[in-house]
Image 1 (spheres, one colour):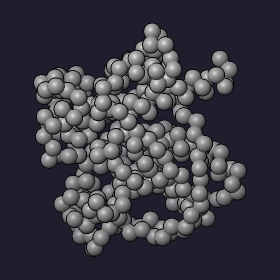
Image 2 (cartoon, rainbow, N blue to C red):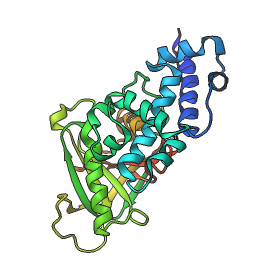
Image 3 (cartoon, one colour):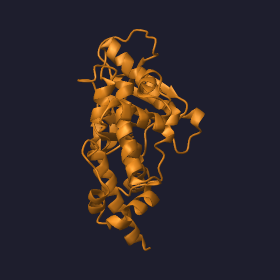
Image 4 (cartoon, rainbow, N blue to C red):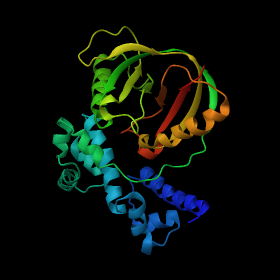
Length: 288
């Protein structure tokens, strides 16, 4: 297969994945998805499994359970039955069976003590890196005072640190999510860093003085200065699709040099309130 044909083939599947991510709360069937990609419905299921690594029905189920599991972990006020119905299950019993089969925990067990490493294993697919034409703008940013919780260790435990930070935000009132921005400082590349050495900081814009707290949240700042900014549309797991072109293509051709501060993210909206396909994230690369 020529490079042009291969790119076109991949692009057709990317349209299918985008369609699934933005229509998780609507009925999805093979004929509909095959039409999105302009593939024959007779061969689509086999082609999808070869491209993604799991069958189309399994992939849709896992995406719906992903949204539901994040609601269980981060929205304690929501009832399990409401989460089950929103995920497309007819009753809590069928939801519990599917959830336990996927993650080895019942929904209530997961809510109390999520097994994040096992959870992450279910979402390892073999989807190729997308070829993205990034739109880069150079801007000047003002310093930002932040509350920061450091994550150190395997990336598959990151959600546990996120949960601690959310608990602090809700209990302290010093970084209310409805009016304070949310950031992530990406010190290391999880694809190339040994798991025990991986570093990532979860941050929220800070209001008021920050006292000592049991979560270990500390006050820091994101320095002002020049930055290259790229907007990424889609799931956080696909941020690399926008980051790699920034480093590999734009930076060498731009003549710019990097400052001694890590690449960071500004999350314009967040899971689980926003479907994965509708997430927007601004990526900042600090420049001299």
